Image 1 (cartoon, rainbow over the protein chains, first blue to last red):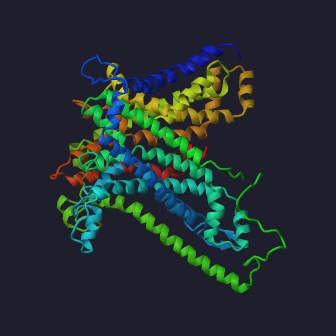
Image 2 (tube, each protein chain N blue to C red):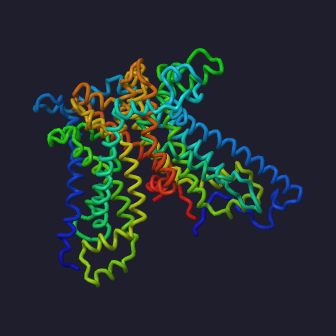
Amino acid sequence: MKHGRYPFIIGFLIVPVAIYATFVVYPYIQAFNLSFTNWRGFSPDFEYIGFDNFTKLFQDSTFWKAIQHHIVLLIAMPLLTIAIALFFAFLLNVGGGSKGGLMRGVRGSWFYRVIFFFPQLLALALVAVIFNRVYSPDESGLINGLLHQVGVDQPVLFLADKNLALWSIIAVLVWQGVGFYVVLFSAGMGSIPTEIYEAAALDGATRGTLFFKVTLPLLWSTLQVAWVYLGIAAFDAFALVNVMSVDRGGPDGATTVLGLEIFRNMQDYGQYGYASAMGVVLFFLTLTFAALTLRVTRRDTVEL
Amino acid sequence: MTNSTDVHTPVPGTVDYPGSRKSPAAASHDAKEGRLFSGFAHIALAVWGILVIAPLIWVILASFKSNTEIFTHAPFSLPSSLSWDTYKTAWTEAHIGRYFLNSVFVVACSTAGTMIFGSMAAYVLARYKFWGNRAIYYLFVSGLAFPVFMAIVPLFLILKNLSLLNTFTGLILVYIAYSLPFTVFFMTAFFKTLPNSVAEAAVVDGASHTRLFFQVMLPMAKSGLISITIFNLVGQWNQYLLPVAIMQGAGADSKWVLTQGIANISVSAGYQANWAALFAALTLSMLPMIIMYAFFQRQIQAGLTAGSTK
């Protein structure tokens, strides 16, 4: 078996490693390098300008707007998604009432799960196009069309109103995300032994107590995973903003995100160095978020 | 069983908890309360179900309407006539047919490539000890921590230098590269769980390393492979940022993938837009997912949640 071992190992690794190194590892290293240059892409020559891109970035009001939006996204989107998903997962799992002391899931729970999960399969770009129409400011929009039916004549400008635009986009992210987390939390709740619920119910625990004292603590590690996933998604939102928002990131910069600014600086202005600097900042933000979440939410996990 | 929960378990015989001994009357009260709660649960769940499904049904209904109908009729009114004209327009004039086939071609190649190269690398990393094994493994897995946006500028430049910008080859290679971290991470864990005894028996029978992999180990890893194939299929089919960055410039629109094409129709559509055709295009692009989901919803749910339950 020793025979031909190394040729085999090298033969199996060479293509994947080569593809990965060329298109993933090298660009990431190059991003750090480019962020210290003033390269604009027209000519092959550029110079290293130290931290100039970063100082410029920190004085850029659009950049700070984008950061603000990420903070709003980072708080609102995971909170709403997790709260709604937990609520429905709990209903699915113990909504059937108790029979002989056993908590049962609601009847037809698989059906609800199938429906809830479906948006997860649709591309975010596609969802963005759909909701662009749903939010349409005239009667051709789903919401304004319905409002018109019930006699509201003043259409709601979901995406053109500075105060509403970002929230309209967050609502779409929540709409798409909830089903995935319902399935995830349901799986987690399903693995909690029913004896624990029975014992607690025998002690006279109400459903509220069951939820907060039994379900939540036992689901903690799943919640942590969910929070990290949603947090990382909150640093993206590119597809939605790029497709849905008025003048890409508007109105008046009210919805812009870092991904969009990177893209714009690269494609529209050819500012490769500056766009890379933004990418580096985004990387450190994501990393800080992930590290903080894992640190703050650390707590003795309950093993069953 | 090391249990350190917050759950308070009563010490027997110390306190008489209310409800611990139930009279028949209390039990029937419980059952009534249970039914009430169950009813409430159904209403709440149904409301969310409607919220999820309504926009999709609205899109399908609107795809059969004329532009005037879309503007003047109630959102959920039935179309006045069932005509496929909007679909013909969407498929040919709006080029949805071409984008669709482009997507199918690219994703078929890239998912196949991801699965082949990903499981080859994962297999070697999981079951062979050699110098540099850990380093390569962590190199792959660290890719999970980096946002793609950070790499997008250099990636664009690299593809430009390799003359791969605006080519299917370039897009497929990039899809494979960015799917490898998760595929390698998941499949390495999976190959580690496979029993040694079968592999050893095959070696005794004189199987080579390559044969061992293709004829013994891969078939044993089938369930893991299916999950990750679904995960990659859905992920690559829905990819938007990478194609937008790579398939651009003059003449690129003939090579666009579906997400990109549809987003572009929506963004560039002005006030005279043919909305009905856009709705038809949306319906056409949702259709494969709806059909796939109808047959394989269990596997799809398992595949997409695979990453977070491991």
